[in-house]
Image 1 (tube, rainbow, N blue to C red):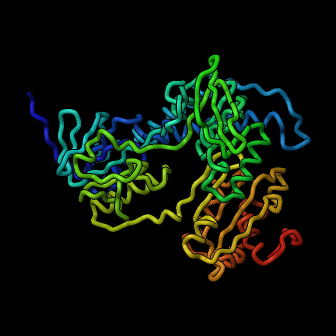
Image 2: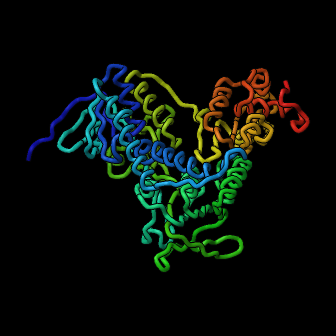
Image 3: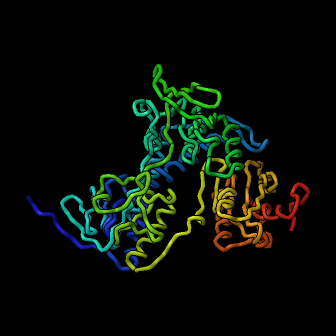
Amino acid sequence: MARSRTDKVDLAILGGGAAAFAAAIRADELGFRSVIINSGLPMGGTCVNVGCIPSKFLLEAGNEYFYRQSPQFACNLPGAVRCDFTEAIANKDQMVHQLRKENYLDVLNGRRVEYIEVKGTLLPGRRVKANGRVLEARHVLIATGASPKIPPIEGLAGIGYLTNRTLMQRKELPRELLVLGGGPLGLEFAQMYAHFGSTVTILESAPRILPRAEPEVSEEIAHCLKSEGVTIHAGARVARVHRMGGRVACDLVNEKGTVPCEAEDILVATGIGPNSTGIGLEEAGVELMAGGYIKTDAHLQTSVPGVWAAGDVAGKLALETVAAKEGAVVAMNALKGESRTIDYDLVPSAVFTNPQVASVGLTDAEAAQRGYPCECRVIDMKRVPKALTVGDTRGVLKMVADAKTRRILGVHIVSPIAADMIHSAAYALRGRLTIEDIIDTVHAFPTFSEALKIAAESFHHDMSRMSCCIE
């Protein structure tokens, strides 16, 4: 039997997504050599292959098709609009291929980074086995990501369910779609396919969709989705799923009893689970948390010195931006001996429905749990001149502040461009700005972002009686 070949490397990385690439690129910039060992999704991981890029492409294509049928302005007459859904999927695939090459493959050229697509296994002593090769690494990064989590619902495993990964590969538009889960993924796919013409029903066991968001945010986006024909069953547990005459049937249990619900297909969008099994973690002594996520300290090092974890497998925040930031932090801490940490309270997040949902910082409830004396204000987008000007007043903005110091603790937005607006709030939180700091900042007029200033002004004034030029 041939002996395994042994190589020495500064950083061995298991996984091929945002965390892996961010760590490898930062390591190269610092003058170190790394090897990326990927056996999961194609190069680039979730974001470029089955997450951010393809879903946002299809969301925008669906938006254009849907809203052109009912123009916002009376001077633009509605007319027949056609959509070739098969072509939309083909265009999505072209975009994925292009960005996988440009943003991942091409950026490795000329760098001290080796990329190999084989199964990698962590061995004791910071060694990684990849096929017939053993890497002796100064440091190892586990960045294997996560996969769709399938809940243990009776009958679900045998009925041929869809996930976001499999649904976006189908070239035929489902006529009817049940969406199991009312979180960010579920809402994006529900509206995406509703805009293309599917009849969509969302099933959420919590009392409201986006259960972790502010109640006002959940209520507003639910109203917007319902106004576009999406049916929402919240507070309804799916007790059983089965096939009936070739259709998917669900038994929903709510306070009124069992309610039948059926459709042509069902999408499971109930969250993710870490890719932490079968890669040697437990054998190497790496401690796992509940649900299989890797336990790390504040610097992202695991229970084994020199072994680090970043991205979805570490279970902090399942965002591409967080994975990339964590990967870079690991490279700095591991290879340069730094002690960098990440303040996750300052990380903005967004749901790319239309209108969008975006949030940064603490909710009202979270702030109270941490002992802050909270004061909050909520404004409707109809108070924002730009929203009135363009005829789109959907949305709300909630601002959470410390009642004593007036420091802003959180901002939560529903707006057509909430994902862009949230960065102003993120800067405000990072700079520990107060309500008065926002008021004293001159905003461009008219803009949706001016909603931040209007919300701050509402701590002092009754906005229903104020001019748009309030100061």
